[in-house]
Length: 320
Image (tube, rainbow, N blue to C red; front, side, top):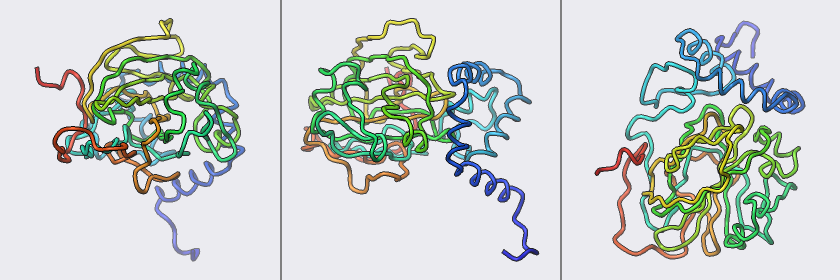
């Protein structure tokens, strides 16, 4: 670039930010070699401070380090940083693929590793396998997904943090496994073995309308460590006293909001044999909630549903 040509200030800051974040050693040091639990507890407290100056200043700093875009947010003003983290979207911002033979992505995300569950193992990064029985906490809970497929969906801190039902079905059980709060970005995944099995996580087991099992595993991370599930009406976090096993019986409709993270993190989706990844699903692809993620073995019974726009379908939004 000629010396006489200067980038706008915002572009200069973005370029500086990108150069900083690409320094792997520094990135890993700043986001992992720190008191992770203490920082996570602090962020949980700080994000809920309801003061306009604190909120505006925090969001301004957040925008310096991420590609935060609030143009789709349902509200334009936030009372706290927490409200911004867990924001809802304007109606029509997401389109859910309602075909019965498709699982929809439960969240906005960047696809990480994905593929087939082979001999009980999957990948968190190339060369870094982990066992799904360790992730689930019990071997019998992982057994239905041997030979099936999985997809790792990483939510960055600037993304929409709510997640939704990928298909019609019934949620039957939630297991909460407390753990660490390592960062879940690609740099950490290439350095920390079995990272997803070390971090705090919830295993949500559901049965689809056609009888097939499905599992969603939300994994918390540094500054996150809080997962809200509507159908249990509890906030799972590092200080959660229990119980760790929570049977439930909640019918959910495809696209219905299940809960949210209080920052960015990861959801791993597991499906049984016969399911396949939807066309175009590959590591590095950006997804929006509602896009096709996996294909069912055969179309479900009943008439074909049309595609429609939806942002949130929480239990309280459903017709009586």
